[in-house]
Structures are given as structure tokens and as C-alpha cells.
Image (cartoon, rainbow, N blue to C red; front, side):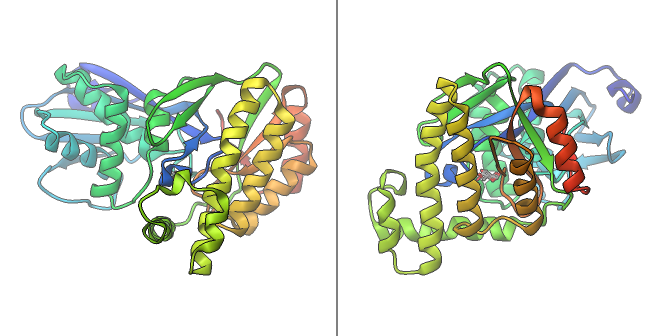
Length: 350
Ligand code: GLA
């Protein structure tokens, strides 16, 4: 294993970790300040940091490349953007960025939709602040990381991923209100397991499609007027003028209602209801939000046929992973049936 010392000739001064995440339900609701229910994975990204004589240098063990980061330059369309962006945003917010060396090590599958970019952004910021002793709350770190994604990388994402990987707790779902940023942790009841299965189709480059979804919601908000989309009743969707915007809003408002019910179901241990709501979520993402693909739909169907209580695409869609709710005792036979039906699928280690 490569160590910080191997790469930079000096021991690391601090080591910070941020996990990947899977979202149980509440897809795209963060864009209207709604509720979400993501869960951190045990796998994630570790960033070590130590002093440098001058400049900021980053090394990725996966890429085996050392890059000098010039904070005055913009994005370069490679992995180090998720290091540079957060540092640029931290500096803009008043933080000192000293000369330093950063080493990035990941055991997350990249491009699978499990938030490897949010994990890298958050781990970078935690490493910076641990190194310099500048105190920041985990929520502030998540907000800075989101800013980096929005303004530096150009993806107009919501706050779910950065909050999930910054404040989430392993083995618990994070019941997060994306408007107030209030949250609490809900433990997964015993006897149940969450499976994250990749459909075998890489997540396509989706920044454009993602930003389009956001633009449709912004258009709806402008048409509706001063009261936020989040607090509207579902039938407001049907009054909008553009049929495409109608479908997009139908999704986020119905998903918001489902997420609140699903969170209560999880708290109460009502797994049949949680599973049913997950299934409905997939249907709405497929028909109203139009972010599913043939491979995701087939995998969701196979997961349900093999006995999952609920299954749906997770994250932004357009390929990547599904999440399924499975009884622990049936997990092995369930996976055998699913992988026989969908041979390209693979299980993401949680
Ligand atoms: C991506 C974004 C999140 C969220 C999800 C969809 O992961 O980064 O903010 O919108 O898509 O729920």
C-alpha cells in the first residue's frame, strides 16, 4: 500500500475519511428543499495531508499521478477538480490555504452514483481544517463542498450527498430536511439489509441532463410565485403550463410526500410500507422524471421478483445503481436469483 511518506517523503499530519452514500428514498427532492433519506456506506475516500515547501500538491493512488493545484485556475475536467474546487471555496470563505501535500485513496467505485465526488470534496475540506486547526462544523463543510460542485465543477446539485457524507452515521439513515438542514439518524431495524447493486451500465455523463431537471423545477417555481415549491400540494403540478414541467413537478412533490411517509415507516419498523414507497419512487423517476434506463428497470424488476420488499434506482439515475430492501435471512438466495437474471449486475460492497 502506498503511504503519504512514500509519495511525499514526509509523514502525514492528519488523515480524514468521508464515506460514499446510498439514498433509500427522496430522489431529487433536495432541489426543492425537501426531505431525503440517504445512508453512508462503510467504503469511502481517505485524504491524508502534510506540509509542503510551497504550493498545493495532490496525489491519487488510483491514478498514480501527482498534480500541482493552482488555485487561481479553473476546473480541468479531472479528479483533482474535486480537491481544487473545495479549496477555492474555502479560501473565498476566508480560510487560509497553506502549502500542503494531499494524498487521495478511495475504495469506492467511481461513477457508480454512490457519491465519490462528494466524498472527495468533504474529505479534502476535513483534511484542510484538521491540518490548519480552523474549526468548521460538518454542516458548514457540506455547504462549502456543495458550493464547489455548483460553482467550480458546474453541476447544480442539491445538498443531499455532501450532507450525507459529512454528517451521516454508519448503519443509520440520515433523515434530512434540505431546507433547514436539520437531521436525525434512524437506525435500520435488525433482520433487514440494504443492497446496492450496480446495473452494469456506467452512469453516463449527466451534468447536462441533471442541470436541465433543475432548470425545469426553477421554471415551475417562477410560475408558481412566492410560495416555495416544497410547500405546495401535489395538484399544483397539474396547473403548470409546460407538460414537461408538469411531469417533473409531479415527481418531486409526490416524492416529497413519499419520503416523509417512508421515514416514519422506517422509524416504526414497517418495512412493507417502506418497500412499497420505494417501488412507487422508482415508477415516478421512470415516468415523470425520466432518469431511469432499460438496465435499471430490468434490475429493479429482477430484484422485486427475487423477493425484495422494495427496489428503486438510487442517486441521479442514467445508469449506476439500484437500492433494494431485502430480509437479511434471504439476502444470499436473493442475490443468487438477481445475478442469474441480470448477469451484468454486480453488488457494491457496503
Ligand atoms: C445527485 C445530486 C443530489 C441529488 C441526487 C438525486 O446525487 O448530487 O444533490 O439531487 O442526484 O436525488
